[in-house]
Image (cartoon, rainbow, N blue to C red; front, side):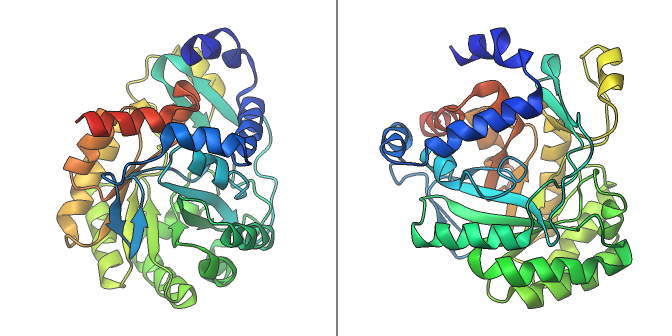
Amino acid sequence: MYALLFRLVLARFDPEFAHHAGMVVVRVLGVPPFSWAATALTRPDGAEEVQALGLTFPTPFGIAAGFDKNAVGVRGLSALGFGHVEVGTITAVPQPGNPKPRLFRLIPDRAVVNRMGFNNAGAEAAEKRLWKLRRRRPAAVIGVNIGKSRVVAVEDATADYVASAVRLAPLADYLAINVSSPNTPGLRGLQAVETLAPLLRAVKAAAGATPLLVKIAPDLPDEEVTAIAELAVAEGLDGLIATNTTISREGLITDPVKVAAAGEGGLSGAPLKERSLAVLRLVRAAVPAEFCVISVGGVETGAEVRERLDAGATLVQGYTAFLYRGPLWARQIRAGLRAR
């Protein structure tokens, strides 16, 4: 039913408008009695629980950063069956993001190109929303993803990340450092080990007891993936998220004219599946068994989530397939995991 609705109606709308409309529905589903009805369809049976980062995740499958940039839909996403919600990316300074249009569907590839540019209301606004969430906790674990403010020079990035961490770490179940988005100039350069090490050290000190993870790009050479994984362990981080979106356009079946028209930005969705899985295996081989590895990129079915778990993922995230699968996507994933 949803697939037909998407093809006949939703695909005709501007992708960013459709996302905002969907977020309105998600927010409504976080409020009783709608949340009661949604939760009745998705309530876990306890068999799916995962212990990681000193936390109990009701299911290993969660929603990746980028969907709920401002921590406004956590309750609704929890009611829809996601085991964790990673909000953000949040920056210390509020920012509108890149000029529109900045979000494009590649429907034949079940993919999306985005160059949103960390559009968000800033750390202070997120802090207030997270305080409210703390008063009435949703079932889902809440992760907070932080990034560099665009107005801040790359050489001043560490202080900018620390400012966000000081505000948000006390309210987060875990904190994720985003140094891998392709849509903020100079950001991916922070993944170089010699630059990343002092950044991780400073943010870890600011985060205190809150578990800290770093999110990396899929476009790194294999040896750099391994080096960052080893650095994360050496610096005492609690985990790593693999991967962000890709700048590659290889292997797409969408009309090349349409791909070119979408322009620059990060590609997410099904085309990222193979590389994301390969990076997961590289990371898992380089870190201890207890180190948390969150795999994200290209998963759409319960079988694909199970493949990531079997390959060593502690937890799995998705985002793009939500667009193509609809509001019961997390429920479908969990049904597939139970069937297996």
